[in-house]
Image (cartoon, rainbow, N blue to C red; front, side):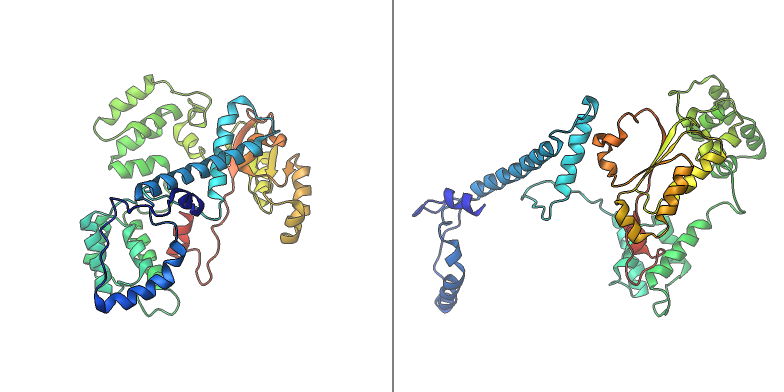
Length: 392
């Protein structure tokens, strides 16, 4: 940028018409100005005639150059790699994003767009500040963060309850204590008792009676899912049930439409489990560090009678895994005994160009991404609001 600026500058050029008129400093400041000139103006020689518009244009050119460099790096990385036509756009976009995010320094040009943060409503902001002042915790940013995650109704309830976190607790910080209190406050609005099934939770939410509960429990999977998805309280439940009987699924071959005629409550209760996954399809696990997740998955699928293989992968190479986990070799042997395949050094953002995964596009019935822990913070535990924020 400095080279471009020097090229644009003309020796002896007239001052820009946009520049403010120069005036002599007052007599009592003249000595100070001379000292500043000796120290600071030596490195600005040759830049006197540069206009602000020219600077903005040069910075825009530099930004375009950085994007072009990122694209060139993407094409260099893909050179010699056989990528199928329907995957080229996705692979190029993914690699370009990775290149831009992995730079050590990301320069943001003036005037460029930045992420707009949502403004807090004035009424909520005033309530947050009121509670912080009341508790004497105006300087505690973590307590402020927990307050900002609450709704205005919850803030009003906390204000009227006269609750205040213990600032002198020797085990937990005020933020941890208040976060736990806020969680308990939400739990009080939930239905009493222990575990609730889908129909009980739906009945409690919409304040339905026993006859509605009985009607919902007798529906098939297709009809019950239709009612749970479309009911908003504006129509009679019986009318929506009749409409569900004639409705057809929008998409086929999905877990949401599996076993349409099976008992609704039982099928929805198993929806997030493996019983609705094609037992003949394969399953892939990405980012499994010590392979314990893949191991339990392989055993569980075997117990269910699934014959599809488990493709277990790790981001690290085998030598690194052996340094970290002493049980890794035993886990690999157990997986292979369950007819699983184990791949190391797998980057899940590059599986489209990884030759080990060619031909698997239509064979996977389930893919699991084991995103890592966001990292431990010294002195903080998993229940701390800051740790929760890092995961969010």
